[in-house]
Length: 71
Image 1 (cartoon, rainbow, N blue to C red):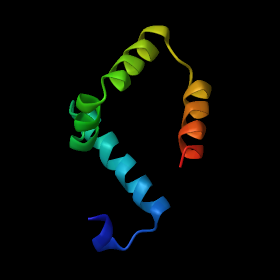
Image 2: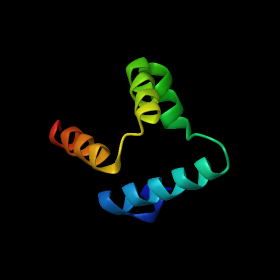
Image 3: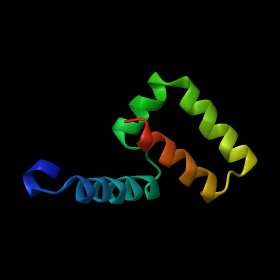
């Protein structure tokens, strides 16, 4: 769908985030995230810990920056 629309990388990311939000609101998890979580138990543990400890948005923002820098 993203390719057919000819979206830029930034637009494609926003499109995927909106689609994921819609999926989550319907009580489901997108297939690519489900597969990633199944293949990466550490990601599952990190999300559970973050939920339990109530990780604030600024910590998530910091993590996102680190992930972007890893490219």
